[in-house]
Structures are given as structure tokens and as C-alpha cells.
Length: 310
Image 1 (spheres, rainbow, N blue to C red):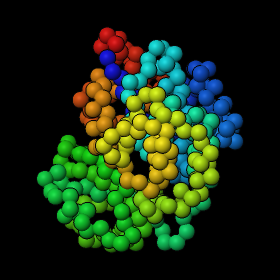
Image 2: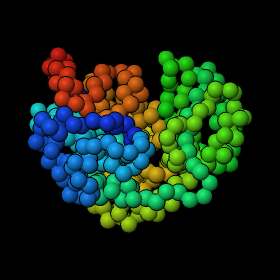
Image 3: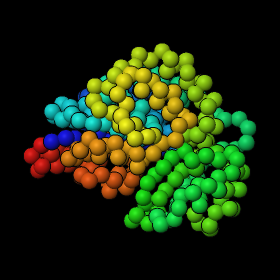
Image 4: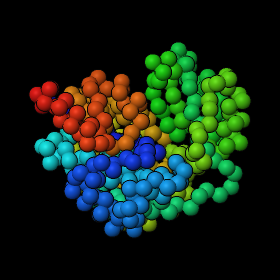
């Protein structure tokens, strides 16, 4: 019986996420304490939600979300559950590499702390938009309309009962509005609260800021099969993981390619660890997907394994 671990991207956590796991399990409290030591945040701050959604994520949320994910993985391991394949999206791919043994926890948290310190972009305002292409339409009729200053940062796959294919388009706000005016009405909408470009070449300055940290990380070959979230195939060597850490800011990501990589490994159940946009994952795999971000869901996951005789 094969088990997949899935890890979602950033901006997934909500107020109160992880609190019940922290209060109940010493293993989770230990991870929060380590995260606090390695990042300079206090545990009390990690347990509180103080700012608007984007600012909270940038300053604390990505570290809190990572702590919850690692805590859930440790709780599952204590119960004898370990993954046969791991896949993560964006932030989740960085954490997934840690779960796969390719990055040490201290290095991961040090890298994420550096991400919280990336200066805001200068120049024209940036943002992200969602683009929905009818399932029976040619992608080129829509993506071929891209204007200067816009890029496809993410492929989201089929949405809305398989009637549309979703894409995330990033770039300069004025260029995104120009593109929106060229497309059919309602095809594209600005994503609220995101005021930076994501997973596009415009983010190259972030790479330069992060370079001093990732250059010092001692990457390892993954001990558990680790799926790419940007193309078909697996990350099999330390060099593969290092390249992804470098490219995480600027490379396009793809849910469909990530899910194909997971399917190639033939899991019979998948656990979605930590806070996540569950709807993206529920129908993406030909096996049950069980989210675990609180104590009740941890019990549900163990029940599902028992019922499947895993």
C-alpha cells in the first residue's frame, strides 16, 4: 500500500491554524520552539494572527504553515505512517524537500526567514490574476494574448466541474489590466490582496536576495521519491533540489504536472498535510485525499488507513 504526502502552497493558513495541535502534542510544541529559535520569531507570535492576509503570510504565515506541516508529519511518523512519495506546490515544494530528507529543518527555516525579509518590489505596481479558459477552447487563443509585462506563473488545471482550465498570470498591474481588456469579459480577474508577482522572471531580484542563504544549504539526495511541481518528472538528486530552491521564485509551477508525477507513483491514499486549499486536491488524484491540519482530521486519517487495512 502506497501513501502520498501532498503539501500546498503559501497563503493557505487561516487564523487559529495549528493551535489545537500545538496545545495537545509536545512534538508540535517542539517544532514551534525550534522554528522560533531558528527564525527569531516568538512562539506566541506564531500562534497569533495580527495583520492582513498577505502581510501576515509574508512575516509569519509561511513559517507557521511550515511548522504545522512538519508537526503533522511527525505525528504520523509516531503512529508508524511514512510516505512513499511526496509532492509540494510552491512553498509546499520547499517543505516537501525537507520531508524527503533533502534539506535539513534548520536550513529550511533559515531560508524561510530570509524570505520574510525580502524587500518589497520597486517600480510599477505588481500583482496576480486568475485566468479561466473554457475546457473546449484552445489555450493559445487566451495565453497567446499576453502583453509585455505579463507572464503565466502557474497552471491550475481543470476547475468548476471540469468546465474550465485555470491559470495564474503575474506581472505589472497596468499590464494585467491591459491583458484583461483584450480577453472575453469575465475570463480574467485580479487576485485580491496579492500585490507582488509570483513565479515569473519579474521576481529575479528576490533570487539575488535569497542567494546568500541557499548557497550555504547542504542539500542531499531525496530519501523519498520527490515530485517536481513545474514539469514532468522527479527531483532525484541534491543538485535537482538545489536548482529548484534557486528557481522557486521565478519558475512557473503546474498542478497538472505535479499530479501526473504523483499518479505515476501509484499511491492508494494521499494525505494533504497542514493548511491547504482542499478543493484543488480532492478530485485531482484517482485515490482518496485526506487533509490533516487539526487533531480531528488526524484521527480521520488514521481511521481511513485502518479501514483500507494499511
